Length: 309
Image (tube, helix red, strand yellow):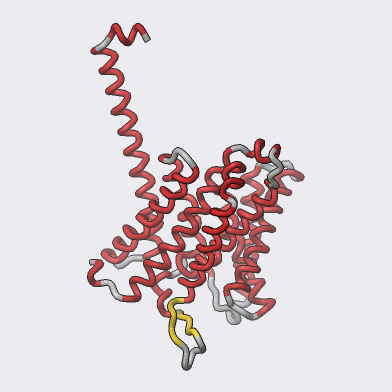
């Protein structure tokens, strides 16, 4: 199958790989901090930021979209926390209220100004990675410039580098906050700042991934590979590597599945990620029962040693 691949297939796979790697790395910190729901919330509520940014500037450039999305993403995190503390509501209920409100406002604005905005709900929710190779960038101008590849590839590529650099530079702080938040406070680490820094990365990754996989599937890639890695890893570094490996496996399996079935690429990638998670759980359970069985047999065959323990 891969022998039949053309340049468009390579661009699609490269873009999907960058989306999956970026979201899986961010997802590791969301899972460790038990904030998977806030990632879901931001990935939906940034629709409002995208629409407002376009209406104010009439531009669809990536920096403009990122600015609007980051602002609404941070506002979502802040309002959810405020509603939880001041309104005495459950944390998950506060998040659900804010993101559904913002997402609904975004949908209303898209409906009202659909003729002016090159966005629609289905595009934002589901995306269409198969169209990525047809929206390209020309270096040096459209007429005489050189084509350097799809706009979505370079957009998510820049965000991937920002995410990777942020994790490398702030690894120790993020590790301490993820595993020992009380220790982080006693060491003088600004936990609030790093919380909103993480939310900024979530917002940026979500917006850069919209063209490729859509909001709903961004949530899948934020949560599922990191959850799979959580079951296997013994350290943060290992968890990051395993999450990225799972995400890349989901991309390859999902693309192959979509190619064979002629189905949605992004949905197939998300389904593959879910199947890999379930397969991991099943294998771990089988391995656990096998070890328990071996331990029981050893105790039966060596009753003296068992009693002396």
